[in-house]
Image 1 (tube, rainbow, N blue to C red):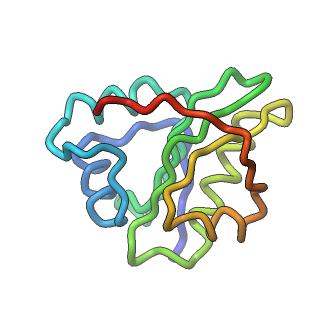
Image 2 (image 1 turned 135 degrees about the horizontal axis):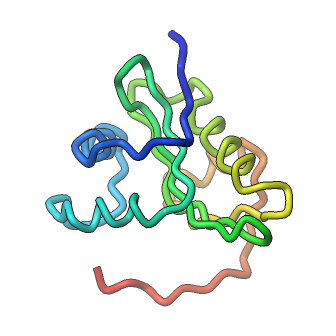
Length: 134
């Protein structure tokens, strides 16, 4: 199996939703809000995707200023592809696109904390949030 990583494409919304449904991760509560899912990806300025032939198997979505910080909003990998280093490669590719000047920041879901520690990210406790209303 040869996984191809791309930074020059935003997949069709149907492919993105399919990936989210089969990755145990869905970034919004209302799975039927297709317009919001389209905006989330269209307005991101770094989208890294992983493909097995023509099947979307992983995605990382970020917003960056390319000189100070990059907020890595979503990282997901299709369940049957987990444990193969794809998530780590998506994070690495995101950091590469953002550049050496950027720090990579993310808010992890509770079940992914160990993954980020395992790939060498540092856990911080100096973040704050004003939660969205969904």
